[in-house]
Image 1: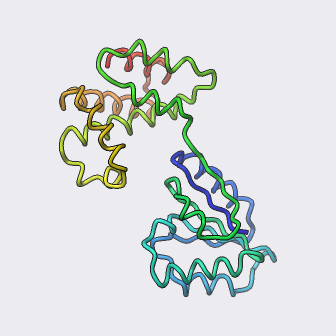
Image 2: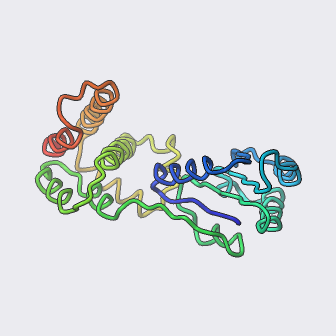
Amino acid sequence: MITLIHGDDAASSRKYLNEEKQKSNDSSAFGGEKLTLSDLTQVIEGGGLFSDEKNIFIEDFLKRKPGTEFNEIIALVEKNSKSINIYFWESKELTKKQTSLFKSPKIMLFKFPQYVFSLMDSIKPGNGKNLLAMLYQNKNIDIELIFYMLIRQIRLLLVLSDNSNEQIDEVKRMAPWQKSKLQKQSSFFSVDELKNIYKKLYEIDLAQKTGNLNLSLEQTIDILLLDI
């Protein structure tokens, strides 16, 4: 069976991948960017040491540029999909074209909740009370996710406001409309304001990891949002 594990919630998809690995007695893992046809063929044709069921885990392969070897690997996987479990983990959401490379894969899509994106899009000076209202409209709040996304959003806004986006892969991969929306949002802040927010996020992260956070992470984020 071929399983495609993908989506913008890479932490959750990674957790699922690791759980599948732990269930496997006989498995092989590859980094997709350096995977060769020879490597994969050797594993597929080799005998299993611990069980008849063979599991292969390949990370970030489908983002490679299509070419002769890429197509040969796809064909080899498809040919052996009935006798071997092959998992593709991708750190981003795959396109329809990518998911259609295989005839009938099992697709595991991990997406961030929509309210998280709405919250990130609403970050601007003086909007703290509204941000908190939006945050607590949701009953099941993943505060760790909110914190991670805050760091990501402020980093992107800072990069775009500082005109250094050509050095950031995440920005390079963005659709024009996504980049334009972030540029507009970054214009609400000065570079120094964004640097100050990013510094506070770094200090919170450090304090949390070292056990020196005086308040809960949720309370700390509340204060941060009100101060924006």
